Amino acid sequence: MARYTGVYGFPESADGARRLAEALNVPCHIAELHRFPDGESLVRLPESVERAVVYRSLDRPNDKLVELTLAASVLRRQGATELCLVAPYMAYMRQDAVFRPGEPVSQTVVGDWLGRLFDRFVCVEPHLHRTHTLDEVFVGRPSVCLSGAGAIAERLRRDGVAPDTVIVGPDEEAAPLVEAVAGPLGLAALVGRKERRGDRDVTVTLPADAPLAGRPVAIVDDVISSGETIFSCARAARAAGASSLRVFGVHALFDAAVAARFQSEGLGMPLSCDGVPHPSNALPLARLIADALAAPC
Image (cartoon, rainbow, N blue to C red; front, side):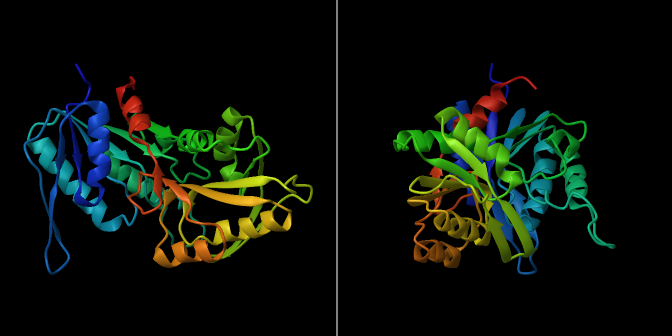
């Protein structure tokens, strides 16, 4: 008997929910959402299943968090005994400490909130810094942190990646992703150093001896939003002599203006995993997530 007996999705992520349900070979149900003129949400769900996966990526999260709370209450009331939240992109993970007086530790607040609603969590490349595992976020709840590296590596393999390609990450936080992409392909890897002065004021420097001259470079990062980190990293790679550049991101959060800038910078459209619905989606995650759900906690 399958551990989970149904997948629930939401309108903006219905395709991802259906792909996951197909991989699990269980029914898929899509919630109905109504937004009142004052901004409140009404969530309607079809009949409940006993052990449910709720699928929703938490990019642009504020309304989604309230709607997840409402959905979980409906499923519990209708008899669900186990709820697993699959959030390919998990929000509010970056604020894991008080950096200035008067700030919240948002990671702890949201972790406690969701931990009261769901029994298990599956996320992909959560934006963790000083927190080492999701178990520290969702205390007392089994949590699985998946990597998008396999999807990126598989695409590079399928495209016939050149053996002298270098996998480059913009900073030390990208090192695990970079190594997980490069290692199975037998490729060289390096990471730069990022100086961030503001949300859109970023400089990436690469090692002075970076062996990029005449070699193809694939830049990989977990999140692409403003694009400034990637643009700076690309400029540094070109200055070091890279013969060509490709860009891969696990989570694509950038808008049309940033997409146009990727084109004008000669980088083409980045390729992203399909956890966050986006025009750049090209790297499937459903099988990876389904395998994680099938594994014992």
